[in-house]
Length: 322
Image 1 (tube, rainbow, N blue to C red):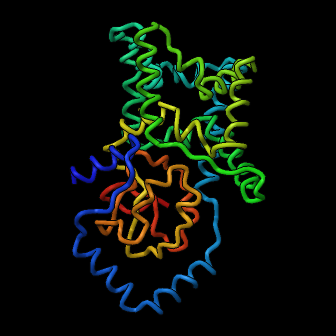
Image 2 (image 1 turned 120 degrees about the horizontal axis):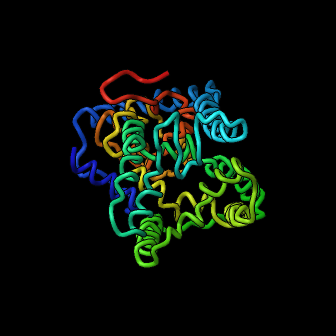
Image 3 (image 1 turned 180 degrees about the vertical axis):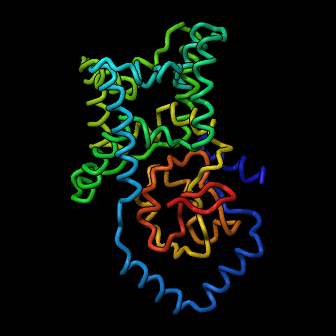
């Protein structure tokens, strides 16, 4: 168990997925039965794909939550109702201070000591993302994630038309950037990442009005449309890495049930972080039921597209979520 968890953490840091050294007897039996009656397996696979309609249920729920959270910031400020004050970087919800974990880390590194009030303000946020797990902040709250998701659709259209080509970078570059931003904060005494973060820029622009910093966000989106799909989220942004590390032990997860999988690969095509779905490749699952790990954004795109329910939201030890 600890070995698998460590492999998931290494994957989050940029290591390539590895084939399991050992596979449980239950998984061996499942795979044997699939290969033993291959004709029936293929027939069931084709039938499932032919009769499955992508519902976008979880995507729509996620978009609704993300928009609602950010609009609550906006209306609280515009209407002066003081429900959710501030921005995503630092805020106050009906009197309770909430501070983004990565921002708090940057500030403490810049000041070179632990700020007690800042530490207290992160505690509630810490508990929240420990409970929700993975990089759920990215897909369910971050405003840049939403606009980048829309930009991704344009990128894929242009790739399909062969107008642009896809360029990938090593996933470990995100870990390098995490260390680099932390080092710059410590050495300079300034939270340099916060001036570049499209999450903070968009959040403040929505609440207080647009500024010149939106030009930087626009350039990022252009880069992602014409050069590299979701480049900021995949290869640069340290926020996702911070929240992924916090949510390692979360009970809430997207789980993979190997018995129901036809290994058709549609889930990996829609996933922002397809390496977490390496277990859906034939021969890569070592347990009958497996969580996708801390780098999963919990976006639900794979759940929506899976024709057999092999991927589903679950609380560990409890039944699946509807």
